[in-house]
Image 1: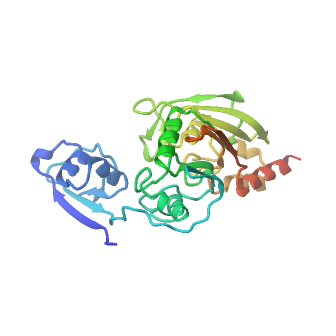
Image 2 (image 1 turned 120 degrees about the vertical axis):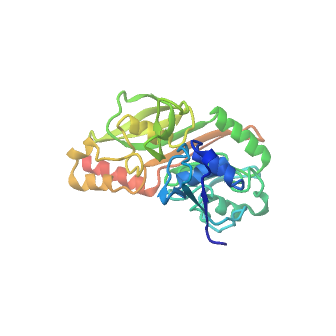
Amino acid sequence: MSDATTTRITALPEAAGDRVDRYLAEVFPVVSRARMKSLIEERRVSRNGVLITQPAERVIAGAEYTLILPPPVAAQPIAQDIPFPILYEDDDLIVLDKPAGLVVHPAPGNEEGTLVNALLAHCGDSLPGIGGEKRPGIVHRLDKETSGVMVVAKTELALTVLSAAFAARDLDRAYLALCWGLPQPATGEIEGAIGRDPRDRKRMAMVERGGKEALTRYRTLSTRHIAVSLLECRLATGRTHQIRVHLAAKAHPIVGDPVYLRRIPAGAKNLPHDLKTRLLDFPRQALHAHRLGFTHPRTGAELSFTTPPPADMQALLRALDMAET
């Protein structure tokens, strides 16, 4: 695989005032505007040696723009023998319990060691071509550090029918989330459009303009030490980081969330030192997709799968229970 390539151009006078992502995409026709926007957000474009972070920045005539293109990657992910827990499998689909820490599909920085690499090895020649080269069979996704039940299509029929079911929310899908604080009311809804955080493009946020409408329904299953709550959350929409963003926006960020937990929660102050440390040091968001039910795309049978939280999350819940006794 070749190394990254660096290209420099000097902006012409007639380009002054144009959006930088649009202008550079025109100058480098091998890079689409969407890809150029991503490269800017990945901090691969600079102006006179200063990194550009906003695709909407205006071009300055005479300025030198530097573009660093990452090395090309294989169009087809490689098959890798990576074990993953299978809950159900037939000729049309696989239902699995995704471990925390496993990326779903290849992306820059995570080209190997993903669920797609594992699926290609498990399914052999039956999976490539289903749903696109980079994400064959992937109907929906979970964040890298979110664990839980997923379904993967093995045929075009399954991909089409399951994708439509997810788009219409015509299925039973629930998550367990351990969050800081006690949501009020104990059962309710959080509604608010979600889009890119204008202050940090790597985060999502509830926004007033430019976002997509989102609705999360929740109910409190239990509370611990008047400091944390175990919630069951259901998605009426499916936005990026939706549960994490909505809970954080209501001052109930998920325990361990590396992106949306930005300060020590007030509820942590009254906890025993060891328990507070354990909660604050939990290395990932304590979020688990614990139930998924859907109609089989070929047979019409109703299928439902439930899994308990993984060992690290269960150990944290036990520690909370023991500290209360």
